[in-house]
Length: 474
Image (spheres, rainbow, N blue to C red):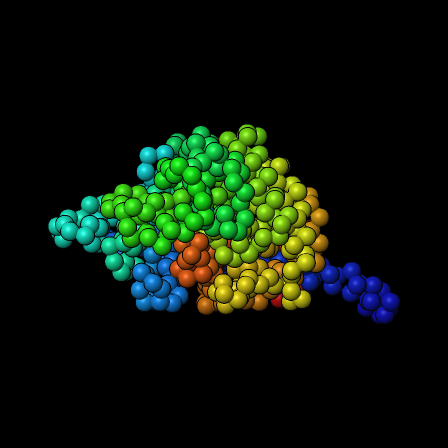
C-alpha cells in the first residue's frame, strides 16, 4: 500500500483477527490430537483379572511404604470411576458436536464395561473378582468367592483384603448413571438410570455414628446432606471421638466397629461420611438427568457445600479428592447443569480462582499432591471458569486466556497425538489421602480435550477465522 497511514490502519484491524485465527487453529488442532490419544489408548484386549477392553490405563499408586499396606507399588488398576469419568468427558464432547463419529465405538465399548460394575441399583468402585486370598484366619486356601478388589495391586494381608471389598458408593453410582443417561441420548437406547431416590435414601440425618474425618475437619453433625456410601454403617448407641479413635486403633479386632468382616462389603472404618465434592457430583447428575428436585436433602447439600467454602476449607474439603481445585470443578459442573442453589458457592469459587491464579496463568495444588501439580489443578480451575462463564457469571477473559495458554504450553506432542501427564484425581481418602492415589494420562487428556472444546464454543467469533484468506494462516 502506498499510503502509510492506510497500511497502519489495515494492520491494526487485521492483526487481532490473525492472532485470533492462530489461536483457534492451535486450539482446534490440539483438541483433535488429544482425542486421538484418548481413543488410541483405550485398552483393546481383555486379560482376566488384569485389564479389560474398553477401559483406559489408570495407575493405583502407593507413594511410600505404609503400615498394613506394605511397600510402595504402582500398578495398573481397573475401576468404575476412571472408566465412567473418561466416558462422560467423551460423551459430552460428542453431544456438543456430533461430527466426531470416531467417538461412537469408543463410547460403546467403554459403556459395556461400566455396566459390569452395577450391583442392583448402585455401582461399585471395583468389579467383582475371585478373592486373591482367603479372608478368614482359618479356611480353605482354594475357596475364592467373588469380592470387590483391585486387579493388580498386591494386598499385603487378610485385613487389607477385607478392607478392599468396599460397599457401593454414591460417586461411582452417579458417574456410571450419568454414563447411562448419555448412552441413551447418543444411541437412542433405554438403559436404566439410577433414580434420585437411591441417593436420598442415604443422608446425614439423625445418625448413631460419625466419620472421624468429618468430625475433625469440616462437616457439622446432622448436616442433612448426601452420604458417600450406599450401605448401612455400624449403628452405635452413643458416638464420641474417643470411641472413633479406639475403633480405628483396634480395627483388627472383631469387637471394633471399624472391623471389616470376611466377604462382606465394608464401609471404611465402619462410619459413613459426607464429602462436598461427592455431593456436588450427585447434584450434577440429578440436574443433568432431569431428576433434580429442590428437596430437603438437595438444599442441605447446597448449604453444606457453601458453608465449607465460606470457611475457606479448600484443602480439607474433599475426603477422596486432595486437589483443592476439584471442588471448583465439581461445583462448576453442578451449577452449569442447573443447580441454582449453588450460585453463592459458585461466586465464592470464582473469587478464590482469581485470587490464587499464578502470573503464568496456572493454578497449583499443595506440594504433597503430586508435587504441587499445576497441570491437573489448572485444568480443573479452567473447566470451572468456563462453566461459570457460560452461566453468565463474571469471569475475566484475561484469566481464562492465561489458563488456556498455560495448559497448551504443557502439551506433550507425539506425531498424530498429544497428551498431558495424569494428575491425581482420586485417593483412598481420610488417612490414606496423600498416600494411595490414582492417576491416568487418559483421564487428564480427556478432561483437557473437553476444556478445549468448551473454550472454542465460548469463542464463536473465532470460528469465523476459517473464512480468512489462506495467506493469513500459519
